[in-house]
Length: 230
Image 1 (cartoon, rainbow, N blue to C red):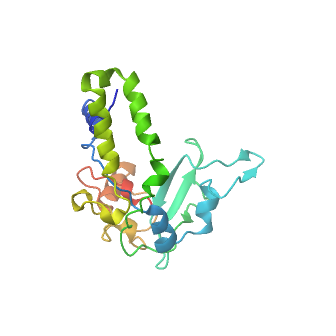
Image 2: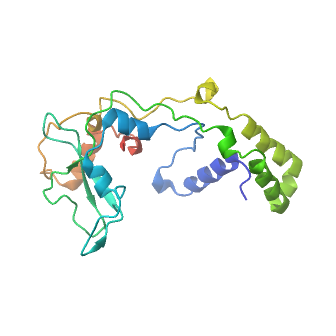
């Protein structure tokens, strides 16, 4: 049983420590989210491709069936001075990447001038539902074996403190809990315009091409690339 956020973080760290092939880093607790939706909509703008081919624009269908989304995708640098990076996708791991031209589809219209802002917090009355949230904690404490050892009253009080400390506005979040968006850096080609090198396979093979790509994207020392996905 996992009683608190700290317990979950410890469980994640212990699991990753036993699976070193994933190169896991210590779990970190975020007390807020970044507003990616507004960042994409207001700062970047989307080409029609994105809503159609990611399954967000309704049910596109043909004789093969209904499109439900992508299995995976690749981001390719553009080769035109006035274009942003392009995206290639496929619906199954055995499919060829689309579009069939190999150029990729345009996704965003503009490179964002800066990182995303923090997302606004929903009013506590909307998600806490008065006493219903803490009543759920109370009910859990009656059936949890681990809570018996910890102490039911102590367990409920600790969660009540967590709820009470959540501000009604993101502007009231304690400065010690704030964190700068770590992935935005204009020096990386993923956030720049056209690539300097021509498209196509590298003459020294795919492995060499992959390592070169990692260096170009600033992915040295096991750095994560997850934050570049808009």
